[in-house]
Image: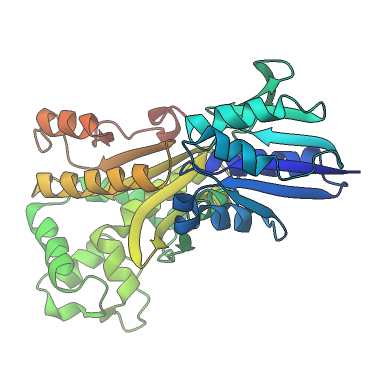
Length: 364
């Protein structure tokens, strides 16, 4: 005998991926298993089923397309299959429309070999034959890669600058917070004209002395040039790496579920994120800005736009943050800006907030 897994497709793909992975591993690992997807024209045009199957490595399956608001059509399409050949039928009714979920539930309640489940948040419950019986916690059974690929994105990873966190970045933050106005101007000149470019040090007045003062580890043996990674580091990437390594240092999550400087691509649209990680089934993004005191609204608006797009395209369980070394106590970031960001779903943490523990700051 064999088993059947029935999945209702909708824009929210994560509950389906979580359930499929769990059942395939825990209940059907050594048993022949067939897969039936209940879909609609809209879901098929988006490719939702393909995203889920690629993540779950499902190559053989059947799909039925139903009219999501027509009970008779749904029942008719479901009745075309022979369910008696299966020892167990696992039905996940979390997806689909409400009409699809109710109709599919009623249909399979007539099958003695069927078990019907739904996922509330990150917990899975048996809904039939025993209603609301806790079945499994699914918070940690997918990876960051699984999560983003379940929504049709591909991950293109960035590279760290290679400048040691323990030997340099860990202490550099203290130097940065004490920079003079002239030193800030030097950083800004690099940002405006040379970020992500090779730079002859003598092109910026005072740069050589500045690099010597902060004991910057220049890779060029002649100490006359900064390479692309070094200009990016000085103009802000160091802060991304500081946050990234703090998360690793605090042992919050596995390295595979934490990325920095990555690009998520879908339909030729490229979304870049400073820090992105998955923790207990929730996707977190952090934009790291050494300063937002100049042009604060442009930066906040850009990040709010990113967050809104993220929540629309990457599911309900997303949280977005801005980390900045600008000060709210010194009015570099105004309370009104912070309040407006939070209304739009983006939490802003300033210089006064981020020490000493990111883990406690994010309530992880």
